[in-house]
Length: 326
Ligand code: XMP
Image 1 (cartoon, rainbow, N blue to C red):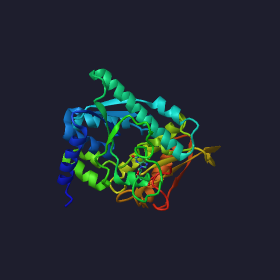
Image 2 (image 1 turned 120 degrees about the vertical axis):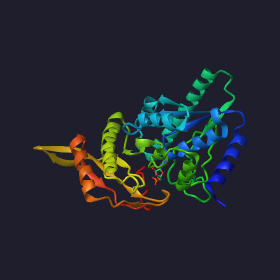
Image 3 (image 1 turned 60 degrees about the vertical axis):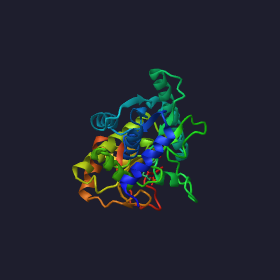
Image 4 (image 1 turned 90 degrees about the vertical axis):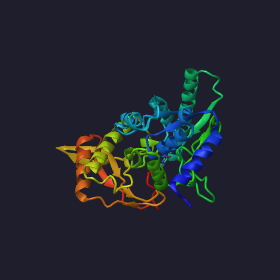
């Protein structure tokens, strides 16, 4: 029978078997999945684990600081932050196709970790042969949607599955590979992962890189980051964080529309709000957020983010729409 206790015991055993005495590094994103994966591996092999947090420059406002604080304070797991924003933004230059973007991000993630591995080897001494495991919080839906499951179609390459380079220098440790999000949350709670992290809404590994439709540039990212911060703050203020599975905020950087502000004509970009409710992200419905909240978000974004002159609401379920726009 499926109990969180059984799954934990089973996975801890499997991890110990796979890893032995080797050192393990973890690709921590700050989200539920990688946090719970890290907690499981930490339980299994303790200090053999070192976690890295890659700041890929595609994070939301305040996210890096939040992650650094949360892990230091609550999980007792050592986290090393690495600033790789230049690398990712350069890799995305000129790319507009969603799969090209996803693959570039996946590739740079792994390259970043290979560099992290080299640094760690230099720090710890030794020949590096014993640091060859990389923990990832890959879930069952990630595997299925990237075409890894039996008979599954390739819908999009999740950064941690279909986007991996072929010359990968790590063996992957993926203890959540057969699980759904709600199961992962239950396991996290049982392991003592703080509620603040366990209850966090999903945020995709490729971050804002797949929420800027069109080319990802520093300018586009900063417009989206500002709009996203407003939308999230208002959702939280309205007390609706737990009602909503997640609310992607999307910048249509290739679209402009005419508007008017003060006595002037504007020709700015639209922002899309994509609040959804879901059980497991395999299917989803658009969230019926209160009109007053939508009005507040729209007013604030168009007033405070100069490049945006229109806010639109996505009212598509999944299927046929996916949750993210890319
Ligand atoms: P879609 O857009 O496929 O998203 O309906 C389903 C869920 O997965 C998240 N998502 C990702 N998570 N890496 C991740 O870690 C990815 O590459 C990725 N792509 C989508 C999305 O936010 C939603 O929760």
